Amino acid sequence: MDNKSPYLHPQYETLSREEISKLQAERLQATVRHCMNVPFYQQKFKDMGITPDDIKTVDDVRKLPFTTKQDLRDTYPFGMAAVPLRDCVRLHSSSGTTGNPTVILHTQKDLDEWANQVARNLWMVGLRPDDVFQNSSGYGMFTGGLGFQYGAERLGMLTVPAAAGNSLRQIKFMKDFGTTAVHAVPSYVTRLYEVMQEQGVDPRRDTKLRVLAIGAEPHSEEQRQRIEQMMGVKAYNSFGMSEMCGPGVGFECPEQNGLHFWEDYYIVEIVNPETLEPVPDGEIGELVLTTLCREAMPLLRYRTRDLTRVLGRSCPCGRNHVRLDRMRGRSDDMMVLRGVNIFPIQIEKILMTFPELANNYLITLTTDDDNDNMTVEVELAEMFTDDFGRLQKLNKDITRALKDEILLTPRVKLVAKGTLPVSEGKAVRVVDKRKVYQ
Image (tube, rainbow, N blue to C red):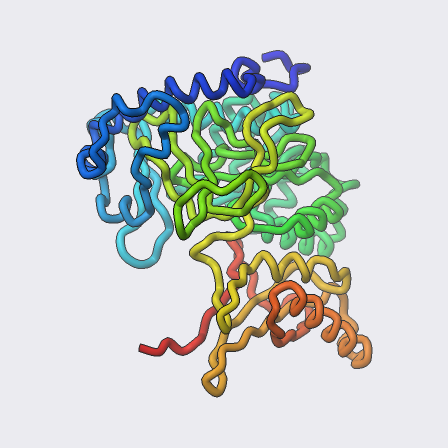
C-alpha cells in the first residue's frame, strides 16, 4: 500500500469509461454463463428465448430478466445458489418479519471481494492503517457490522467492534481508544451526540474523531450537514444492501458530490419503476444492479426499489465510476395520501431546515371521519414550551413549508426533546394506522 496515493486499487479506480465498459462486458458474459447453474435463471432464459451467447456488450444487459426480492423469497433458502452449498462459507439474511426472509450466500472469494470493496471506500475518504475504526452497527445477520469490520481489517486499521447501542460505552471507547473513524446509521449519530452533550463531552475537544461513515437508512443532505456540524467531522454517505453483498456498493469520495458505484463489480441501471424502461441521466428512477464478481449467488438486474438518479460519470477525484445521488427513498416506502405520492425523506428535508428542531421525528398516518390524515411529530431542539406565541409561529412556518413540499397540509405537533421513541438501529419514521377498506 502507498499511503500517499488517493487510490487503494488504482488499476480499477482510475479506469476510463471505455476501459470500464470493456471490463464490464467481459465480466457480464462470464456472469451470465455462471447463472446457468441456477434453475431459476435457466427457466427465465428459456421463457425469454435467449441464451448466454446473446450477451456480448454491456448494453445487452437489457435483454436479461429482472430479479426481485420476491424471487429470492420464492426460492428460499438456497434455490438461487450457483455453486454447491459445500463451497459456501457464510450466509446473511434479511430482517423481514413476515414470510420467508431473503438469504444471500457467499464463497470465500465473495467475502474477500466484499472486504476489498469496503476497504477501497474507507481508503478513498482518507483512512489509513494507523487509524482506529469503531463500528457501531449490529453484527450477525445484518451485513453492516461484518462488512465494515472486514473492510477495516483489510485496510489494516485497528478495529473496535462495538456493535449497536450502549451509547455511554461507545463514547468511552471513542475517548479511551483514540477512535478516528466511526460507522453508524445517521439517526444513531444524532443520539450519540445528545448523550455526549449530557455527559459534557465535546467531540471536537475530547475525541480524535475525523471521519464518519453513515448509511443503512435514507437521510437528507440537510441531515448530513447537521451531523457534520454537531460532530465537527466529515460524514460520508454509504450505500449497500445484503443482496449485493452489504455495505461497499457505493460510497462518497472527499468531493461529496454523489456516491461512486464501483462498476468493476456492478452494472448500474436507473429505470422507470412502472415501465422498467431506462430513464435519462438526471431523472429519478429505480436503481437496478447486476453483480459481476459473485460466485455463490450472482444476481441479474436486481430491482433494489431504491430511488435515485445519475449525477455524472467523471469526478475531480479522478474516478470515472458512475456517480449517483443519495437515495431519495424506496418505491415501496412511498406513502400515498389522498392520491399524492410522498416519501419520508421529503419531510425530513424540510424539518432539518429549522434550527429550532431536533433530529427526531415521527410521521403517523390515520383515518379520521373517512379521511386520511398525516401528523408530523417533531422534537424541539431546546425547551421553550412556555412561549406560546413562539411555538405557534414556528408551527405555522413548519406547516406552510411542508405543504409547499408535499402539496398537502399535515398536522404538526411540536414536542419536548426526548419525547419520541429512539431506536438503536434504523429509525422508525412512519407509523400507518389507517383503516384498510376491502
